Amino acid sequence: NAGVTQTPKFQVLKTGQSMTLQCAQDMNHNSMYWYRQDPGMGLRLIYYSASEGTTDKGEVPNGYNVSRLNKREFSLRLESAAPSQTSVYFCANKDRRGYTFGSGTRLTVV
Amino acid sequence: QKEVEQDPGPLSVPEGAIVSLNCTYSNSAFQYFMWYRQYSRKGPELLMYTYSSGNKEDGRFTAQVDKSSKYISLFIRDSQPSDSATYLCANNFGNEKLTFGTGTRLTIIP
Image 1 (cartoon, rainbow over the protein chains, first blue to last red):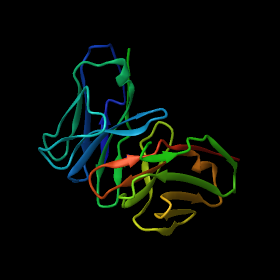
Image 2 (image 1 turned 60 degrees about the vertical axis):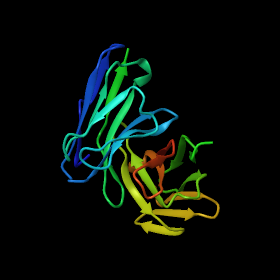
Image 3 (image 1 turned 120 degrees about the vertical axis):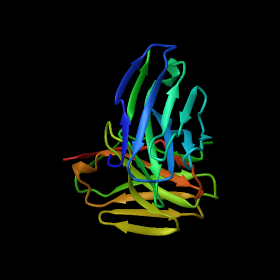
Image 4 (image 1 turned 90 degrees about the vertical axis):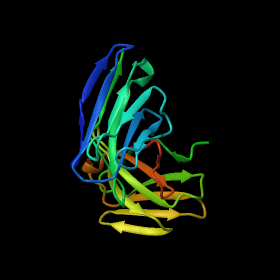
């Protein structure tokens, strides 16, 4: 999806391993978000950042940390991955009308 | 009770038919209403956006909001195979958090 780039696209982790999901925008928007999408659960907000240097918890923040080092980048870190964190992760930013999503990271924790 | 309820489907209709997708919501404070379309293995993309009761048209798509009954609908006229996707309704208070329905998977049969 134009404007929001996520890496990696796929990842398999072992329980207890750590990793960082990267997200970068080229749209110069202040607000950025991390969602996870699970079957039957829809999209659920993990963390968001209303501006550079600020972050806030969403609906399901446990087990995750985020970092908004600059306006362009918003990363999501799993310190000790658990099978319950197997999901598709989407980063998004927001303009006055709505949200632009990245193409997602498919994460499997075994 | 979830804040936004959406029938997950799946829904299959023949090409050319009119499609009706629906959501109900529980919080009357929601101000903004959106429909997102998500193709398989892609991120959601904004389809329609409205903040008032009534109808909003965009080509073959019509979004309808009834705030008195807390009901939102998306109508697709002259449906095409390329409309096959998952459709997500989303509501917002006007702040940073977007609340999604679980999505309805739609297949248009040629």
